[in-house]
Length: 100
Image (cartoon, rainbow, N blue to C red; front, top):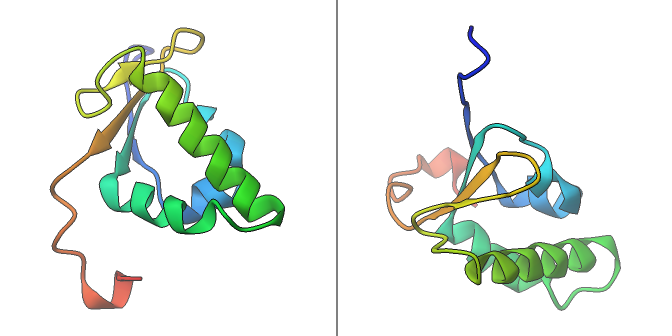
């Protein structure tokens, strides 16, 4: 595998709630966050404790990224060559046993 090979990671709500810093953990790669994950994060942002803190942190971080570009097209993080994109489509056909 060459050094220029980028990987694509789809991040789940649980990952972001478990570790708020996980959104930064994919240097040199592309991260996709399904739009449903943002909806789910909104449900947790009013909670107390680590879960609520993580939800608020990720929401603020993504809000800040919006000032640098279109999240639906992807925004490149300057410090680690990571791209974050919010995906609006393509996650509708999740099998029932994987659905919330």
